[in-house]
Image 1 (spheres, protein in one colour):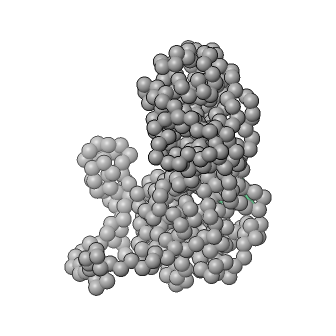
Image 2 (spheres, rainbow, N blue to C red; image 1 turned 90 degrees about the vertical axis):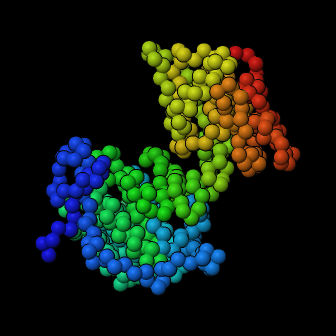
Image 3 (tube, rainbow, N blue to C red; image 1 turned 120 degrees about the vertical axis):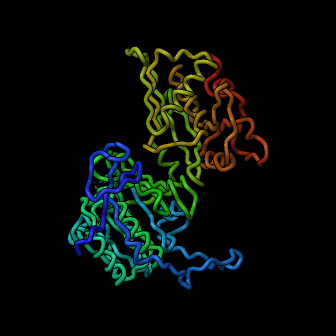
Length: 456
Ligand code: TYD
Ligand code: MG
């Protein structure tokens, strides 16, 4: 019983020690020792391939129609790639208080309602507290089982006894393995618990959702640590003071990534947002300088979003460059192009660029709208509220082609926009729709001329 089951391993060089050390005696690196479980390989030396696990010709593997569990929540289904794949491990990360437990409780209810059995393991709230929240969310199903438990071995045995189709672990940072001395939430605990759950999921065909709080670097291990271990990584994001929440897939072995699902946090839980473009544009100011709309692809869906810029003369030696929702480096690059190729004098201007509604945009097709909003604010001249801008900007000021132009334009048309300015290269190869004017541009200068007229 007294046998050592865990040891501390240097993450830099692999040096092993029975005790924690601040500095690795082998490679001299500091703070690199992490507790790891010791596997007893002596007993499993003579591995024999079990009959169910033999190599087989790929042509003979029969692929039964992969059965996914429909969550009945469209936004979640899409982010997962069409429902929950049995036996998969899904990490749901996000800031504390953003709504992860709410989302997963509602998902549980929705799945249980269709007759699937589901186990909700909470390490944070008592069964009574969960019940209290569930009453508010109108959750009641005989197929939804709830338990408060922190010890991994106990959770494992409950799962094996109950054999549910879906398990939710809320949260991984509160779970501990009794053989590991480190505190719950430490790198060793979080990693070991996840590895156990992974095996459990794969060998029993149970889909397991793991909730992971995103934390400031330090005391407890965050979900980033687990990203490579799990099948699917979803992040639940949003401003705490805004009501919308975005569920984004950043890794998915069973679907496309960068897919987003949009929800709104209401009094009695999360509600799906069916038409995000409408939501994001709902508070758009009309006729004010510094605003431009882009049709951005979020996964497989086009979403119209407003980009806002504010330029004002600086009182600092180095002007400020702030960006929320878009990459700050990208904004700096676009401003450099505007200076050099258009001749805008931006060096004494503070610039703030913001994506309205708290979404984050990462694709290059938003460049042109960023440039137009900056120019619009700089010249204090409003853009036409019925214009949409699409295009990537190159260093010579050229507007480069983007993917899926047809879908982007279609979404703009659907929302009543009258004109889209797109890269000239994207004019060919598809049927241009009739009721919306489409203008192709080769350079940022051309786009500015169309959007704001020629004056500097
Ligand atoms: P929660 O799901 O507990 O967040 P997490 O599990 O990510 O820590 O969400 C908590 C927040 O959501 C809390 O601030 C209250 C709010 N909320 C609502 O606005 N409406 C609701 O119906 C529920 C259940 C929570
Ligand atoms: Mg929670």
